[in-house]
Picture 1 (spheres, helix red, strand yellow):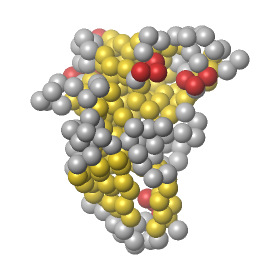
Picture 2 (picture 1 turned 135 degrees about the vertical axis):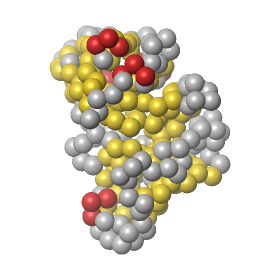
Picture 3 (picture 1 turned 135 degrees about the horizontal axis):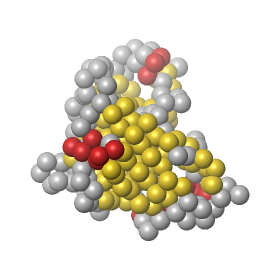
Picture 4 (picture 1 turned 45 degrees about the vertical axis):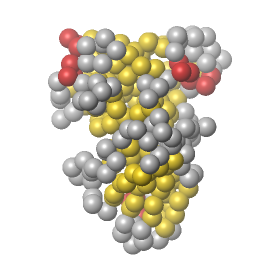
Length: 109
Length: 125
């Protein structure tokens, strides 16, 4: 069981906006940055969002991140079929360890 | 172009040992924290270990402490993971990843901007 809690699944239709939540505690999300990764089937994860809401170059602005207190969210607007993937949040914990959420499988209907 | 190429995975019996390697290229290896992240079949990502640029600091997930050792050779641009006393639950694809660090605290962050393709470790009799 992951310390960072994500819903196991999410879904949406093309063009819709979907959000994925990530809940932690004061020792991780509450006091450190949040990161988001996208993992397409059979591939290595890809950095999607860093430091709560920053996008690496090449990541479309359809992807956005936010953080409030001990929770964070990833929003995907203008949903596309190629967004179908697993999404993971991550944060450093003050116990000197890195944590990943359990992952959310996004289905584009 | 940044490249990370893992090797050394395979089938090993419970209690056995394995050494993974990660060859880095396309960046100044000695300037970055490096990490190992694993993914059990059909499961989520799990951070395994971090090592500082000069190898002076190392952090591990509790489940591998005392069994796994992360190390690096900056002269060879290589990262390693020595895995001893392997258990069935260590079965996973192991990824090598380049990590960032927090300038204020000096601690590594889970900002993994480049990943290898992964190497599969199977622990089974």
